[in-house]
Image (cartoon, rainbow, N blue to C red; front, side, top):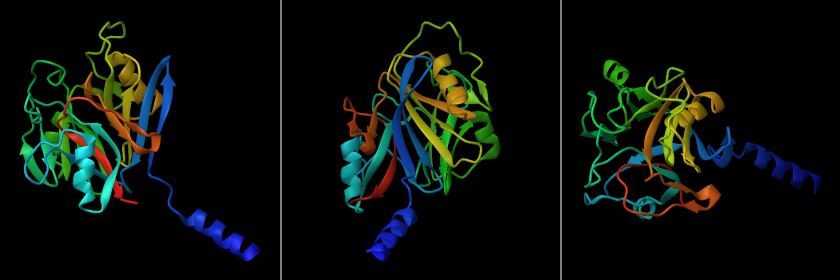
Length: 245
């Protein structure tokens, strides 16, 4: 009996902990849902079209496509701004194939509020990189999506953010650690300003780089939380893929 218990305990200790952890938190009176991903362990991907070139648009459509591989989504979130046809506004790479070039210049809307940035997924890491730095470094991304504005750049908030701004929305974004292994996806549960959202990543989560994905259309799929947000079709989607059970 004792030997059997020891074998069971050893198996539990040896079993790898989940590298995707989702939960709710609050910071300065605002509530957020966060999902933290270990990019060195997890299969983190971007999704736009199915095998026939049709826009996926919804989390169940991504799940259905993955089922053919014997896999499924563990977590997913909308990942960048898109046009009416749901094509990415900025740089987009999927499985090593570039579908949209980098947009370096300023423009209308949040995307063009420079500096903006690129979320770049590579083997064993994923990084938020400011767009000009991305163009200078030319990293080889397996997956990439450009969005804007940057929320945190090298530990500093975006210079255009105002502490007393009255522009409040539900917002979502992503931040990364310096070594690219810790990636944190966040969706606000209350209306927040850019300044408040940026400070969550910098001051509460301790991340030196963070990027805004979108507002109002922000949606989340988190199997751990039993959460599956629904609504109109999305453009790029970021997700963690796991084997189907």
